[in-house]
Image (cartoon, rainbow, N blue to C red; front, side, top):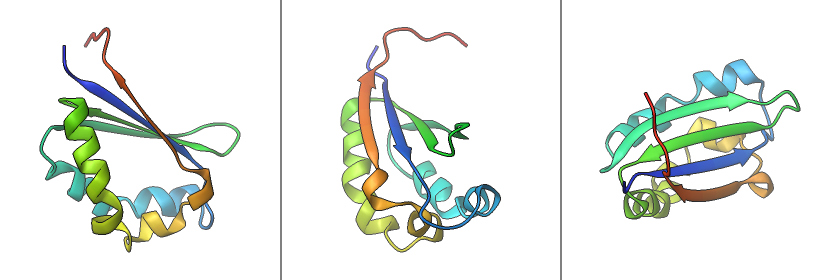
Length: 99
């Protein structure tokens, strides 16, 4: 299995949860156009931090999209709401998948 999970954790610098979720349209549209993109789940933890879980067809697809994301999405409203110092991105190969 070559699929890769991308896990991004962050906090917001501005805005509330509802406005942040609503501002994600540009990111969602961009992701759908990226080769190897499979799915995305975005959630807010009880401590206020956020978790963005993306599934990619391969590690290379995840890293290629990641390299383009900041230049192509840097001015989108949702990205502007994220505190830059809080970004934590990691990748892991899928070891087990159900559903």
